[in-house]
Length: 392
Image (cartoon, rainbow, N blue to C red; front, side, top):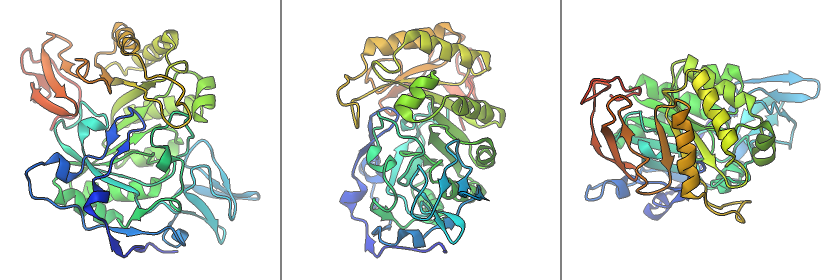
């Protein structure tokens, strides 16, 4: 098996401009270069679409696995699937062939967009810049509330994919003057090898790398990620092992370990907590989560409480009440978390950054766009208080 191109047909502008939905906040995803830069003459990347037939031929040997008497055991995430011929792993991106494990999510993203970095959401990382955003099909969790389920719960064999190998991703990022590449929409853990190889090339060209992830990954591959990743937003789905199993098909501890390792490795970290009515809107649980963040020296890590919109298998639930989000924010602030935001609620005022010392407005956001920024040299322009983040 070798890496190769798969399509012949060029992507149309209409396809390039299509929107999906963010799995964290429920907002529309996919600001294209054309829609972001109105009035600027730009065209979509010269990408190609390919069918799914024989997709396994365009793959790469996996990086973290072992051979066992029962089959090939993947070591990327805590699922540690034993992959057999004709039985892919839980993420649907790993297959066994001739006693080797391969990823079929390599160079074949099903989503390619240019987004504001604020949309990830990353509020303290290169504000007002653009992120070249890619995703393949597949995910190692199975969240009932997933709002990108049409790609996260699919295999690369089931989606229409672009020909975009790592070196091409880097070139397109540079073409569109993006400061970073975001591995997003589904979960880069499912397309680990593609993310790592692309990020390594990007870093060599001075491009930042950000992962938007549920953080369900084993320590060894995570530390390898940290060699090339500059920032991460981790979706901390709840603070209950039982809810993780029933809502997301995962466990809590591996995610908490991921958060601690990212902090330890110096990756800029922000956290999103999607509040799902009747599932994760328990204020006692939210307080425990915030206390844990504070006790682990994560009080300067921006925390985003995000509004749930009914999608996928939880369409019977209402959207999160704004009052619930505001109360969660107050709990976090009272616990000592210094930067707490509310996402997916327009004009709430809780998307702005205020100085924790003098209280003045530092960064005003209108939707995903910054209308004013008073952080200068990583400090408050008014009182010189240090503001944690990556600002230049």
